[in-house]
Length: 111
Image (cartoon, rainbow, N blue to C red; front, top):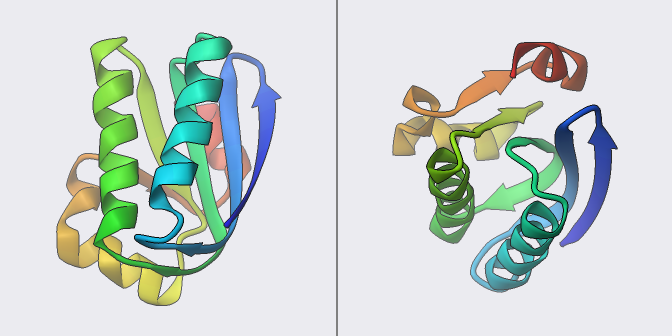
């Protein structure tokens, strides 16, 4: 899984490409947490447009970042989730606590 980080105002945007599964989850978690802590980020946008597959380990990554930011009174959202990855989000009930946006711009304005 490839991650690209961009800072926009006080928000961190992560563009993810590849599969978010048990093989990549720990590395993704570590890279995101490192960036959140180093830059003292409290607003995170995860862009899923390049994610072709996600399993329960991916859910764990997203929920873990939600909990981490919630402690800091921060916010997390996801954007451009599609196909089978969107189905995983729906089946897990994650959209009840984490907002989905159709575009990065919409997410930036809203969180």
